[in-house]
Image (cartoon, rainbow over all chains, first blue to last red; front, side, top):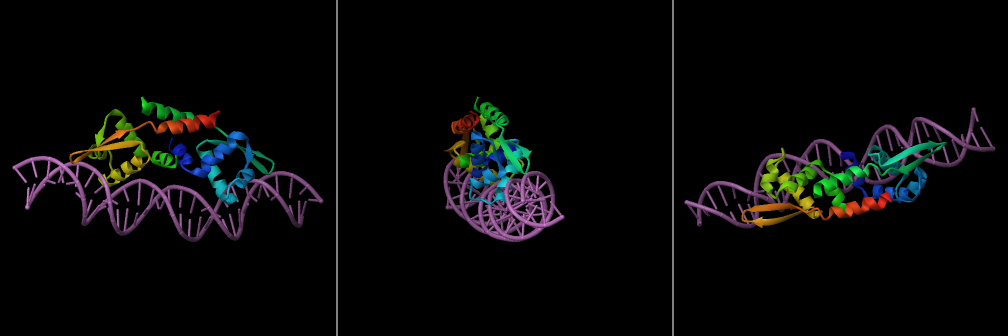
Length: 84
Length: 84
DNA sequence: TACATATTTAGATATTTGTCTAAATACCTA
DNA sequence: TAGGTATTTAGACAAATATCTAAATATGTA
């Protein structure tokens, strides 16, 4: 839960998730969408991976990232519990 | 949205919200529930207020804090949008 | 093998954050 | 008004964070 909230507490990372909503992307493609260096994006992807918000698969020299929204159910549940 | 995710990105603040779920509390009562000084709790309450996750009302020398879950709908909606 | 491309790792740095102590403010009551 | 209680504000500091550049690793191709 901690890693999840931490991962979501950054505008760039939230935008990465939005990009991946549309289609799977390589690290390089993701990096091109931002005005940030590749190492920095790589770091963001690592934090998103730790929170299991993204999964990755190696394909030759590329690493393809995919969105995983299932962990967001935990937050949904947390909010629902707080609300009732 | 930024302030909201930021406010939620702290274990102590999330626990404060859980306490307020049960009943309204004064700043002092909230502080007593944690092993943290009152100024630190006051700071957390300020961050929660900025995110509108809590409201406060002055009652004599006391300030009574209440939970406001309506802003959590924004996060719910953000998650739902990401999921479909 | 040698070189190019894709990505991460390592290390540095400036900013943000959570915490503390001490002081200030606001209200209550004798 | 004086003293006590509740809370916040101010200022300091250590730890965490986002970013960068340079180097390392892994893969593809001539």
